[in-house]
Length: 79
Image (cartoon, rainbow, N blue to C red; front, side):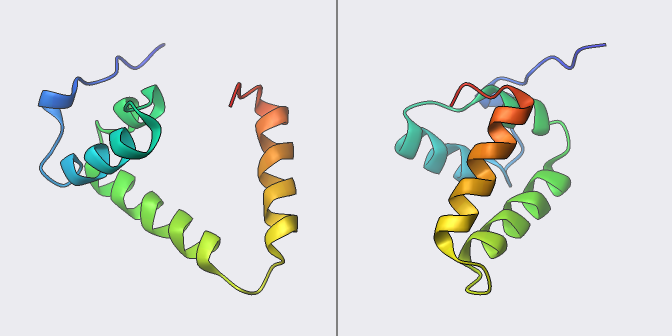
Protein backbone atom coordinates (compact mmCIF):
# COMPACT_ATOMS: atom_id res chain seq x y z
CA UNK A 1 0.00 0.00 0.00
CA UNK A 2 1.33 3.40 -0.97
CA UNK A 3 0.27 6.81 0.33
CA UNK A 4 -0.38 9.35 -2.38
CA UNK A 5 1.43 12.62 -1.63
CA UNK A 6 -0.66 15.76 -1.31
CA UNK A 7 -0.12 18.76 -3.55
CA UNK A 8 0.90 22.03 -1.95
CA UNK A 9 -2.54 23.57 -2.45
CA UNK A 10 -4.00 20.71 -0.34
CA UNK A 11 -1.71 21.34 2.67
CA UNK A 12 -3.24 22.37 5.97
CA UNK A 13 -2.71 25.96 7.10
CA UNK A 14 -0.33 24.59 9.76
CA UNK A 15 1.99 23.11 7.15
CA UNK A 16 2.10 25.93 4.61
CA UNK A 17 4.81 27.92 6.48
CA UNK A 18 6.90 24.76 6.83
CA UNK A 19 6.48 24.01 3.12
CA UNK A 20 7.49 27.59 2.27
CA UNK A 21 10.66 27.30 4.38
CA UNK A 22 11.49 23.92 2.86
CA UNK A 23 11.04 25.26 -0.65
CA UNK A 24 13.22 28.25 0.19
CA UNK A 25 15.93 26.09 1.73
CA UNK A 26 15.90 23.04 -0.57
CA UNK A 27 14.32 24.46 -3.72
CA UNK A 28 11.30 22.15 -3.51
CA UNK A 29 8.97 20.41 -1.11
CA UNK A 30 10.27 16.85 -0.68
CA UNK A 31 7.96 13.88 -1.19
CA UNK A 32 8.10 12.54 2.40
CA UNK A 33 6.72 15.86 3.63
CA UNK A 34 3.93 15.64 1.08
CA UNK A 35 3.01 12.20 2.43
CA UNK A 36 3.24 13.35 6.06
CA UNK A 37 0.90 16.24 5.18
CA UNK A 38 -2.02 13.82 5.54
CA UNK A 39 -1.52 14.16 9.33
CA UNK A 40 -0.60 17.81 10.03
CA UNK A 41 -0.53 17.50 13.82
CA UNK A 42 1.93 14.62 13.74
CA UNK A 43 4.03 16.41 11.13
CA UNK A 44 4.31 19.54 13.29
CA UNK A 45 5.15 17.46 16.38
CA UNK A 46 7.82 15.56 14.46
CA UNK A 47 9.33 18.83 13.20
CA UNK A 48 9.47 20.23 16.74
CA UNK A 49 11.10 17.03 18.00
CA UNK A 50 13.65 17.04 15.17
CA UNK A 51 14.55 20.67 15.79
CA UNK A 52 14.97 20.06 19.51
CA UNK A 53 17.30 17.12 18.89
CA UNK A 54 19.36 19.15 16.42
CA UNK A 55 19.58 22.09 18.83
CA UNK A 56 20.57 19.90 21.77
CA UNK A 57 24.06 20.50 23.17
CA UNK A 58 24.25 17.10 24.90
CA UNK A 59 25.68 15.24 21.91
CA UNK A 60 28.70 16.33 19.88
CA UNK A 61 27.63 17.88 16.52
CA UNK A 62 30.05 15.65 14.58
CA UNK A 63 28.54 12.57 16.17
CA UNK A 64 25.05 13.78 15.22
CA UNK A 65 26.14 14.18 11.60
CA UNK A 66 27.68 10.70 11.56
CA UNK A 67 24.50 9.21 13.03
CA UNK A 68 22.36 10.98 10.42
CA UNK A 69 24.64 9.81 7.63
CA UNK A 70 24.67 6.21 8.86
CA UNK A 71 20.90 6.07 9.33
CA UNK A 72 20.41 7.51 5.83
CA UNK A 73 22.71 4.81 4.44
CA UNK A 74 20.78 2.11 6.27
CA UNK A 75 17.44 3.15 4.81
CA UNK A 76 18.84 3.84 1.34
CA UNK A 77 18.30 7.61 1.35
CA UNK A 78 19.83 9.27 -1.71
CA UNK A 79 20.50 12.58 -0.02
